[in-house]
Image (cartoon, rainbow, N blue to C red):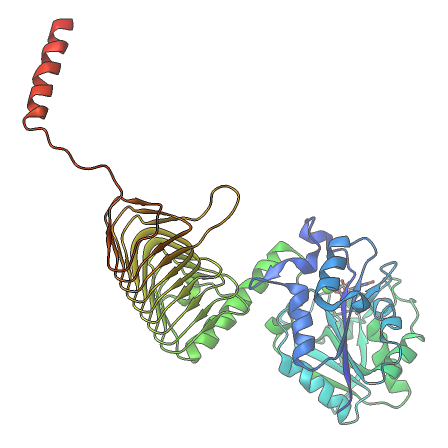
Length: 450
Ligand code: UD1
Ligand code: CA
């Protein structure tokens, strides 16, 4: 297999997004569109990935530098067209002799199988491989002009197409595979003599044919090559991603009672035999293991839910929440950076932050881990089988021993030993008949005033 590299085009202005954030950093499924393209390139085995950006995009520059390193950045000084953009990456790929895939930074949902097929077409002897699709409305897309045997003869941009060519519904996705040497050699022959006055990458298809190379088309579904130019299209891409993930999880044995109301991230893992009730949101970094139940209106992010646990309704798991096997996190409970032991329960109204809760502990309603003093965060540790009475404030750092009981309404500032009872609240006093006397006195006072 030839070595593989990717060039990701992201030097466009993205003005239609009406955003101060560069277009390709807008997210689909919780991940920047550009990172979808980078991930795709990695999944098909690209060892070198070059991203083409414009000179005035500092945010994009640091994003790419962070993800791939400075060497992975190619700057296109002026936006003179897709062919010119690819040429801008030539220096970064100096010495590379293998196969190159050109991707866009604004087309996040391309399946890796399609790109794999393009590389395979090159390995089978094609000079150029192009990813095409049948468009519902071909509109402004470049048209793929093919011969009787399906080979690609040319790619014609809509603005340069004849009325006959405009009737073609097989369109160019923009994704193209070419051996590096051929790519840059042909690009040096491309001119800007066309309606837009741009250097078109697409012109290399006809040039490759002129030198006797075969050009192959690989097709995929239109929704898989959806490009994002506006917020409307961003929402469409998001919807397409969600629909795809819901379908995949249903097929994999997850029950979604109302699939269209559940939102996943690019990396959400839900194992078989889990049930997800309506209106649940999975932000990035969530892994839910077998047989767990995520009840309605819960929000999960950066959390691990072990087998057979039950979350919600109305629960919030924040980054670093680890919910043990069979544990229960109920309504209006927020868990952050806290391990909840197997079988432990926090059924209602609690904040559990920066803690560690032992197996089978019971956390009463209204328990708060007071983890922050305005400057630093501190740990709360609760032993196995401990029982925290309702409405208790545990002022961290603090440790509650195994099997200990904290009386309801306590403010706990000192460690509690194993199996002890700690009560930290005002003692109850009772004054017989005090209430009746009080009422009589007050009624008399009121009467005297009127
Ligand atoms: C391009 C294709 C067209 C295809 C369509 C699919 C060409 C000439 N046309 O058209 O056949 O159907 O995509 O969406 O290739 N970019 C740069 N620098 C530039 C110009 C563009 O980096 O100078 C980047 C853009 O950021 C974008 C991508 O290249 O990610 C495509 O550019 P765009 O101008 O949107 O191409 P289209 O005219 O839509
Ligand atoms: Ca476009």
